[in-house]
Every structure is written in C-alpha cells, then in structure tokens.
Length: 425
Ligand SMILES: C[S@@+](CC[C@H](N)C(=O)[O-])C[C@H]1O[C@@H](n2cnc3c(N)ncnc32)[C@H](O)[C@@H]1O
Image (cartoon, rainbow, N blue to C red):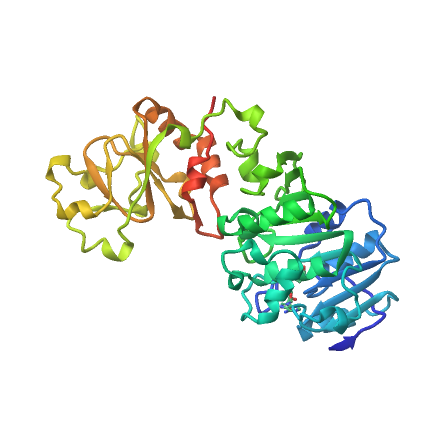
C-alpha cells in the first residue's frame, strides 16, 4: 500500500475517458448520483476505483466536512488528484481495491463507511481465490451460477458492502448487465432481499463519451430491511430526470431498468393493476429461433432469411412481408431440409440481435422460409396475427422492442424479453 496526497482537495476533471478507454463519470451524472443519496450526514465517504475522483468531487459539494478516502491502482489517477491538493479531509491510496485485506491496508475498518461511491471498471479480472471470500462476506457468493463469472463490477459492489456500515448508503454506476441481464437475476434478488434498493436511474446511452454502453445509477441502503418497492427513473439526454415509477421487488428482480418497466411490460406493474394486460407470451403458440449461422447460410440448399433481408416497410401496403425469393411451398421441403428451422405462413419474423432490431419486423404471408439464428419466428394464434404485426411495426411497437432489448451497440432480445412485451389494450 502507498499513501499519497493526504490532505488533498478533489476537483472535477474535464475528461470522460482516458487514453486507455477508462470512462470517467461526467459531472452531470456524478451530481445526480450525489443528489439521490439523501437522509445522510456522512463522516466517512469512500470511492473505490476513484480515477480522477469524479464522484468524490461531486460529493464534496454536498458534504464538505466529511472525510474522503479514495483508492485506485492507477498512477495517472493519483497525479490528477495531487494537482488539486488543498483540502484537509482527503486521503488517497494507490492500492488494489479488490484486496481481501483492503480494510487493514487503507485503515478503514469493515462496516465503518457512511457513504460508498463507485463507478467500477467493467472488466473481468483474473480470478483469485480471495474474490470468493469477498463475495461470501458481502452475501453475494451464491448469486451467480459460478463465482468465477463475477466481473469487477460485482466484486467492487461486494467490497463496498463489506466496508459500508449498516444503513450506510452505496451510490453506484452500473452496466446494463447487472441491471437487466438474466445471468444477474440472482444478484438483483440478493440485493433486493438484503438491502433497501432506493432508486435506479437509467442513464442516456451516450452519457459516457465514446461508448454507447447502457448504464444505470443505483442507490441502496445497506441492511436497512428488505426492499418492498423500487423507484425507477430515467435521465434524458439533457440531464433531466423523468417522474419515477414504482416497481414491486418481486418484479424488479426480473429487470431493474426504467425503459422496460415504463413500457408497461407484464412484469412492470403491481399484479392487481396489470391482470388484464395481454403480452406477446399470452398470444403466441411458439417462439422459434433459427439455427443457421451466418457462415452456414451459403451452404444451405434453400435461401435463408437473415438480418439484411428485412424489407423496407414502405414497400408494402399491408405491412412488411418476407420477400418472395425466400419463400418455399411447404410441400417442397425435403426431410434433409427439415433439419433447418422453418418459419411458417402467418409467422411474424423479428430480428433477435442488431443495432436497429426494432425496425426489423415482417410477416411470412405464405409457404415456409428457413430462418437464420439471428431471427425469431413469432407464431401467434391466428386471431392475434394482424394485431401483433400492426403493433410491432408501429412507433409504439418499435419503442417496446427497443426497451426490451439489452446490450451495447448491437442489442439483443432474449425469448423472455419478447414474450413479456405488452400488447396495447
Ligand atoms: C470506470 S473508471 C471510474 C473512475 C471514477 N470513479 C469515475 O467515476 O470517474 C474505474 C477506475 O477503477 C480503477 N481500477 C480498476 N481496477 C482497479 C482495482 N483493482 N483497484 C483499484 N482501482 C481500480 C481504474 O484505474 C479506473 O480509474
């Protein structure tokens, strides 16, 4: 451990990302996170992975008398802090924040921090057995299929939870995976069960310069009772926060993003209020995913409908349809060809992945058609086909598809995402 720049001041840097692609938090986001942490008069504030101290700097505006401890492995982070050395209550450590013995190394006892602030690195560090102990200690070890799947984001959360006192508040900036990914459902469940998750704010996609990564703010109060309901909000491109919506915890563990719940997904409202809502899952007989990969398309004996084959909606008066060259008469498909996945007449084809997947929807009007592994065929009950198609190609439908999707840049839709989209009344 090395102690540096004791008694320094924190001043906000102007850059968002450095030459190594590390994304530093812009002031608007830091400020929103600090504003969201309420009901505290903290004495000790910690920022693990502080970079240039964006979060601690914003906190200083609100809690000028607190003691600040910042930790980062990066020497450049240190020099940026040193430049602004005048304040009496800040200690910076150049140290690995994922050290199991961090508390001793930085002289901050476990369960002593009032406010933890963290925009963790979104990488997967080489696994160390001590990570298992950090997760275990924070009550997060059983939340993933394998603890080895834990990225730095989850490990930083765990380390913060260890250092935070009971009822201490943790303000985080988290990647979309932890907030919406199926893989992290167990993590969300554990956080909601053990702590009071107060607020989650979905940030605009381009808020961190140079990346379209979807990120979210999350504020929780450690061991303050099980979360019953979570307030969700969204920050617009100009930094304004939407009105909050409130989601019960048993639905929030499914996903914690405002975009999804605000669209009125089946899982987004108290059950009593959404009992009458009809979802795609309620009206489909099957949701089929193709199996032919892009590299196998050429060797397939039949034309394969893939992402680039969706027609422009304006080409059709009755809604977009699969172009004729992909359509086979049903009788012509041989046994061998049946090892491919076929969409059938009446199926609605949607893109499963892609940057603009919400614009890729069309109907197979007759016959059958081989679909690639990037395509879903939604086989709805006949009485719902036209309603479903009309909705999915409408502006509202596009918004619903986009809101249900995950991922950075190229987005994707899981089966559960598609099935939980709510149809209009
Ligand atoms: C996404 S940046 C966030 C910086 C700052 N908190 C902010 O919001 O602008 C993550 C920071 O974590 C630091 N970091 C990465 N791994 C670390 C580790 N094991 N221990 C301490 N800091 C680490 C990086 O050097 C980087 O400064």
